[in-house]
Image 1 (cartoon, helix red, strand yellow):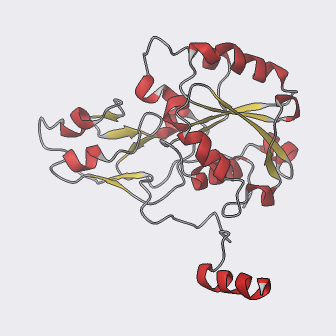
Image 2 (image 1 turned 135 degrees about the horizontal axis):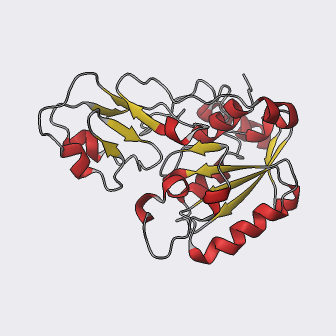
Length: 249
């Protein structure tokens, strides 16, 4: 009876895992923005006024994915429909400046790190610290280990202690109350090690940029090796960014 029940579930749901995370594009995802070619109407600043995090620049029109929360208000406000949020989840970058998207940009680039690939390509341990986050990014990061995305198939796993970790994955804006915890986690990690900034809050402060409770001094001397934008980032955004960094085909 149990076997027949399992077969019925399999027939009705199909494969629960994503066979190819490199090609998958979630339906309905507000992913990587696309900016149409051509100049904006003279004096128009509708998209800038609509953006709650100051992610949009003019002359030329550009969107900073490190500040963007993917609310889609800019696209709704633009009278010329120049901004569109595509379902493309691949938006990670190894350079902060590379997160700024302009017209004609197809995808942010992640240059594979040869040193990381040599050391961690077959075994990478991640320690996640929520530095004042709302738990949105944390939920999506947790999902990377489930049966759908199955990050472990690539030898990449989450660990409970920073002493067992190769990379510190930070989410949240980095609040004053988490200042010491973040530093202690980083200092507890053995060399070689690197930092991954996940979500708009971690990358730029997001909606909390400039708040009195935010203390981002950690990033003054510790530059992330990888930026994963989103609010929160889709699990595929994180998985693809990590695989790109390690040079996994």
